Length: 304
Image 1 (spheres, rainbow, N blue to C red):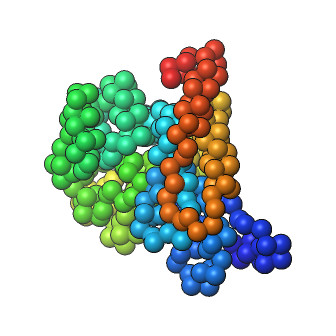
Image 2: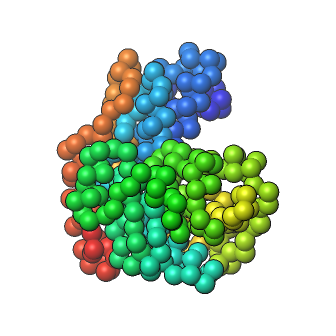
Image 3: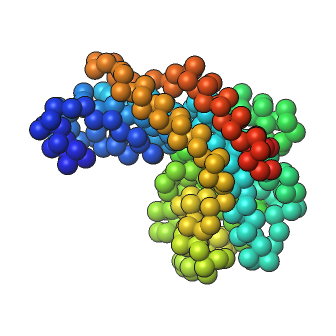
């Protein structure tokens, strides 16, 4: 960031940022030394976590919100499939099956909707924890059980956080039964309070990967009288380094939405900070073209 600002001082050009997790937006507003340069930045954000961080700021930069666009919602289908597959692989490695397991999904947003659907297809007994009344009602309307977190976690075989913010505190982890598996499908290491878990646990055992391609280790923590397994040690389980499980063609829609967001951000005049929704006409065009593109690209893409 300092290098980019140094270039700006020389050429006077604005700076366009494609952000992933709100990192640049957060740093710009957290450090006073960047205050004189905030007006030259324009940001495009693709993650819910990044938007949640932006909403906490008195924004002095424009942020184009790709995270909550229709195009980004389509990406959630593939992320949900990937996360379900990673959890299934982890259970299989320990001699268990996803079918029949009691799985609690924390959050019923774009990815959560797709994730619970995939888990149900694989035979899991799914419970949703969602504090937003409208989203909770949608989950119930589709036949999913919606419970308070404290009740749901007490009998969970698997707990998956997909809210974009911390959804599993140390107190929540203490509610889980012996041998429960915990996973994150969020950005960065935010869904699970891993710092508190690391301090409280009496033992941490790193587990061998399920595949030689996996570079993100999982760990078993001894928390009081029970042990829990944290997939990816709290990092997003869908980015474990193994073979790409979502077809590359499927992710083009996010690339297209980010490009559209970049074009939109570049046209925003200075003095117009705050969150800006992705242009609705562009969003619909991207979505329609993507659906046409994936016809004939294989079964998994045609399911869109």
